[in-house]
Length: 143
Image 1 (cartoon, rainbow, N blue to C red):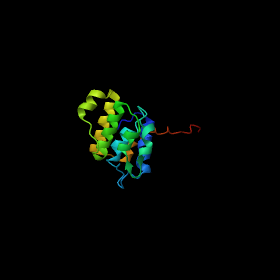
Image 2 (image 1 turned 135 degrees about the vertical axis):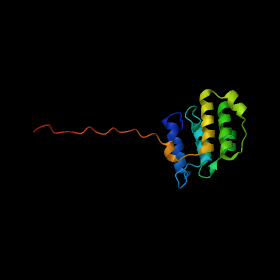
Image 3 (image 1 turned 180 degrees about the vertical axis):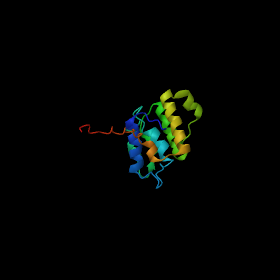
Image 4 (image 1 turned 90 degrees about the vertical axis):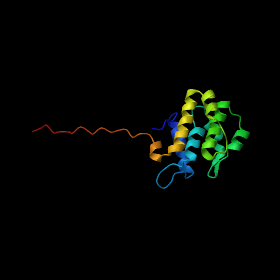
């Protein structure tokens, strides 16, 4: 099961995947974009508010993102991890992630790594359907 920070985080990831046609014909999410978008569109730290203009149908401009915006250290590490999972363009060591990220950001980093390794179908990104109980049968008791 994929852990999103909240419903807005999930919706943003699915929206960007669908908007830029990053879903394959077999309904699998693009394994390069998914982990990067998962990290970049996080609502935990409002990172998504700063990076939207650097994501388009041609790709994700990580270099420009980091040079044009001021990010706290933990967000910079998440962006570098996103870039590494996307195309290997930036380096961030496991020690940096372990030693500096808070528990929630570290969990998101691990989830992104898992998404890169396993990929997934878009349906796995959607909220679980709630089971609808069968309606009680209605009997006409009048004879």
